[in-house]
Length: 52
Image (spheres, rainbow, N blue to C red):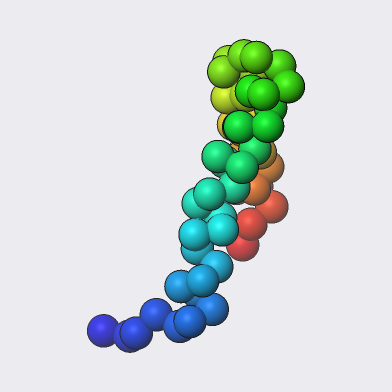
């Protein structure tokens, strides 16, 4: 089984935490978890479409 590279290991948490990094400020500005969820979902779809 191949060992994960250090680049992959350090890069993955950043991708995983990006949704929380978007949701908290959007909720803070709008006061709505629904709006924050829509914005975060839109980001996830855009990221999926633009990824490899």
